[in-house]
Image (cartoon, rainbow, N blue to C red; front, side, top):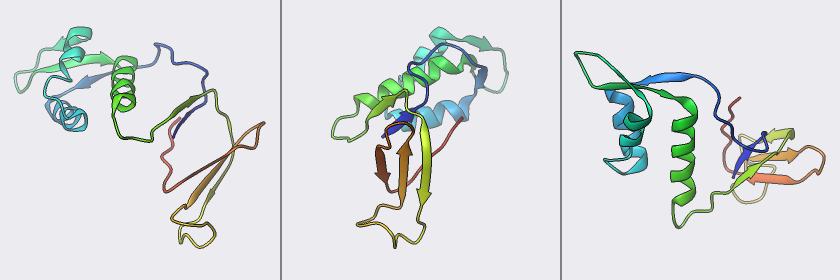
Length: 123
């Protein structure tokens, strides 16, 4: 489950240089050699004698990765927008929860619980 505080994604934020090592990582994540072409189409080439790089907006990369994640078949990935977090409980030794659940996240205002094996947080 992907929980996002904002009710929708907007095109704002920073840009970054996507060098050869980042391109390789994105190809491996996407399992598609042509995945990065869209970033060259949307970005600004960086003249670098060592490698072909591109300056690209974070929102362009975010949207492309999100689209790819949500397209994956045979997955249980869900995107929930407008979710504010009230509480996070982490049980590292997995003794408090049934099965292999070791993270419980409580949604603010509704007290809905999200349970999982791990938690990745970002601002």
